Length: 285
Image (cartoon, helix red, strand yellow):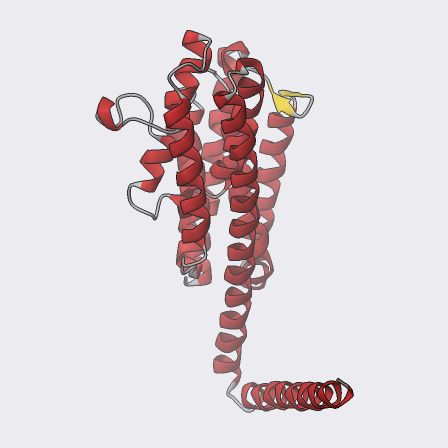
């Protein structure tokens, strides 16, 4: 046992030395390059760190999504309508934060998130099929099979996110895509047509886009500090406006908002989307 431990320590020290040596050689290589090339190498390293951090975030959100979906499915299968209604919107928020990644897996997104009419009725399943039963029919009878499929699809998503390649352009287009999601379906109240819990999805999409911005902000500030400050300010303005609709850990029912309130939310999203879309050009990603 002692001999094995000694060997392990020796191997560990050797491995540590190799890593340090590798880092030293890498830094020397960067330092010896022309300033222009050095800047490009440093930017690539910074963007790689951002994409790695985002993949970790996606995996964390997907883990929580599966856990919450299991609780939601249990409530549906045991016939607890009230609990299933309570869990529905918070569960979807984990999915909505990473929706651009989820949408990259072909039929998986419609299997999880298609609304009535988006696909043939025979193929319609996922959250919104169960949403209709919970709010329109006020029952879970007949939803057991859809609940099982939902949990299976959520676990498939968890497995697939391990394989996804996240590049800087995917990151930037993802942030813009999340705001487009808000603009096209959430702000008009079409996403959650039975539960009217659109503000949960709205907030989650914004949080997902803001996460991407925070990861890219250090590099963006080097290139265009004014643009980074503009985006940061517009996120803060949107977050502040959205916060007035919070109720406990959740949000108001969307149909309770007045027309001028939904109009302002829409204007804030549009005002943020324009500078956010410039990140790709500035970062050359």
